[in-house]
Image 1: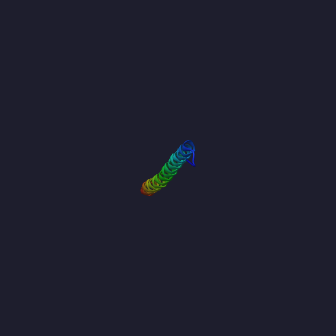
Image 2: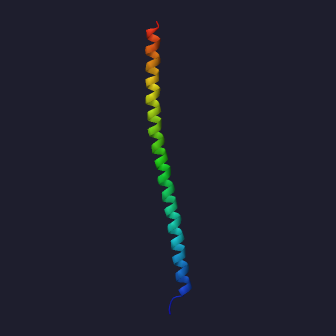
Image 3: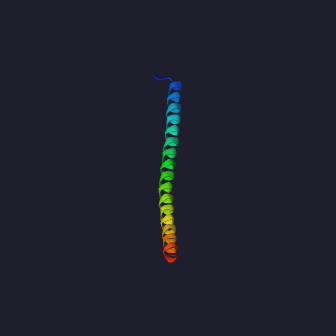
Length: 65
């Protein structure tokens, strides 16, 4: 045979490990992106609620003047 059977297995093992590591990094990046997106949505909701609270306080203060 012109190729070594052991080196072929070693190359495949290396490719499998590299593929698994690459896949793990892709999952991590996707999770980080999802967390960032959720955080922006939550920030928007908090901003809305704070705006409503501010309006209620302003209205309450105006009623007592």
